[in-house]
Each structure stands twice: as C-alpha cells, then as structure tokens.
Length: 180
Ligand SMILES: [Mg+2]
Ligand SMILES: [Zn+2]
Image 1 (cartoon, rainbow, N blue to C red):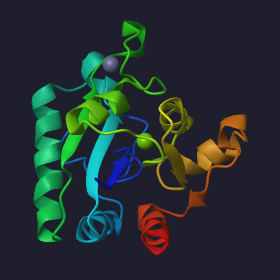
Image 2 (cartoon, helix red, strand yellow; image 1 turned 45 degrees about the vertical axis):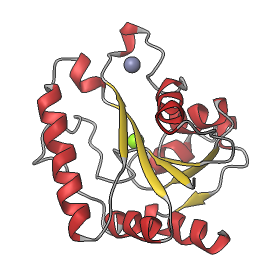
Image 3 (spheres, rainbow, N blue to C red; image 1 turned 90 degrees about the vertical axis):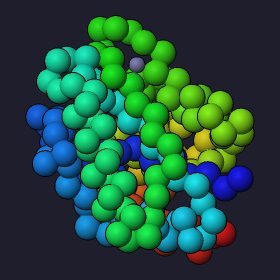
C-alpha cells in the first residue's frame, strides 16, 4: 500500500496554543483538504497521528474530538477526499504513555492497523516531536511551516537535519506526487 501519515493540528487545521477544543475551533488550513484529496486520487491512503492531550488535561471530552473528526470527514468528502484512519493520544504528558509523540506508539498503532511497515512512509508534521516519532520507526519526516512549523524551524534543533521543509501541506503533497 501507499501510505502517508499526517499530524493534525498545524498540518491539516489551524493550531492554537489554547488547544483545539471543539468542532467550531477546527478550521482547515487553506489547501490542506484539497491536498489530501489529491493524495487519495493518486492512490495514497491517508492516516493521521495526533497528540490530543487536551483530553487528558480535561479541556475537552472524547466526544468533542469525535465531532472535530466528523467535521473533518464532512469537509473532506466535499473535496472528494478521505482520511482513512485517525490514531490519537488522549493522555496528558504526565501519564508518560507510549503513544504521545515523540514516542512512536501512534505510528506503531497505524502500522498494526494496516499490517504494513513504515519504512520510508512520509510523515508530515509541524513539530519536532512529529519528526522524532517518524525517525523512531524508520519513516520519512517532512516539516511544514504552518502551525508551529516556523517556531520549530527557529529552534535550529539537530532533529531538523536533513528534513525537507515545505510552506504547507499543499506544497508537501505537490512534492510527494512529483516524486511518485
Ligand atoms: Mg502539530
Ligand atoms: Zn498516549
């Protein structure tokens, strides 16, 4: 299979330092949904791996997350696109779970879901932890400047070495589809 894994906040939808807590606050980044639809049309399965510690912090309920993802599915369907699988970590950092990125648990969940390997699978994120999780499973990290992307770049962290940087998901997808 041809799989692409996306972070959610800051890649698909606008991020907020105050967390995205409701479907109302879930607002797609311009061009991101069309980019997912283009991936689908090119034969890619699109999965999402997302830290959602707002649940563990008591900021919103799992039902609110379901509502956000229903909105995502509805808006995507209107563009002819689909996210096939969403793996999320609901835990607060203190829970010290195995799934919260930069740990690779969410990506491993996705690998199990599809019974596939993640070697060289593109993983698009806006934070260092996305890149680290991708690297931990041998996947291929890509960074976008949307969301926390500019802040991530400004860290000049060694984790950025060799990671291609794109303006947004639309540009990252252009690049992936040209390569394919
Ligand atoms: Mg993010
Ligand atoms: Zn977790």
